[in-house]
Image (cartoon, rainbow, N blue to C red; front, side, top):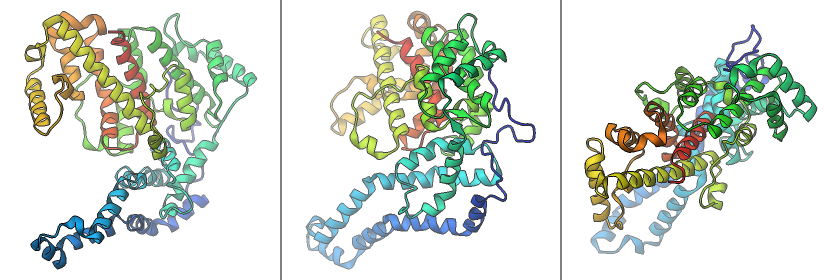
Length: 458
């Protein structure tokens, strides 16, 4: 299998990705000068956004003697033009994409992470490159953005990282593929009689139209690109939860079989999450590409993004492209899982299967959510529509359900239990409108593809 930093020079940290003189660089000199100013600028961002001012204004109006007198006089608040205008202004602002981006900036600050990564020379900078790319698309780094100065160092870090990559021509792609094969790396990555041959790798390279080859770590980027192609090919041609496929994916995506004690920071801190993935065995070199190259490489490997059922112009304009796409994919696979579970267990045990075939506590939970929804005026829906994402693995792997119905679809219970935890961080990210990293996206695309393949055409 490939390993991170394979041809990194000995005098460099194996996880270092920004090849610059951090201590004496103009960027770091600017960072040192801006150290005290940064917090003030972030506070200025909040004041500029108007959130605090509007909240204070609304609170003042609500508690003012005039408004209290109006209530006593049975004058409706809605009849107060100033109050109505303030409410509408605040509502529109809270729904604006820029406020969403400001919240993300504060809650899951890719920019702040880049500051710290540059100062400490940590590989955590890799974790923020993808999210920073999305923030750039939102206009966060525009010249008129009030926090632009605070984000300048992060923006420069992203520019420096992307400048390391170039697009080889077709002749060079052939030579690189042959060099890769000659070094016997391809044989280590491949399944017997399956893997990425030199010709197939060359063809995949030639399909790339955006810079992907790291000029500082050439063989590392080729090895990672080849491994992505190999994963895509394996997921396409092998049974979705085959033992051999599962074992091979563990070498690249980590071993998730043991029960996981989820630390809250894994879901809110990009750097902590990156370390968490690596501790499980995730190979961070697989995502060490600029965002456009990373996504194009996934598409060439057959791990393309599942298209949303309905495209929204507003969603595209919102700028959080990866988060929106992840949300669409998770919703799609969740609907497919609900349909699959309900269909198969109804066929085997009848329409009341949920009373007898759900793990302890799940049936009562679904009934309670259904009751509350209908009391609130919701239309009647099937009981399984009240399931949570965390319910599916226990239902699928319940011993009698597995033995009597589901084993033929999945083959290996252990592999099913391993797939769902890989989706847990990204599932919570999209639920809370937080940024999704390239590591998250790789895990998402592989596991969604495997689940959909297992339950396809049922």
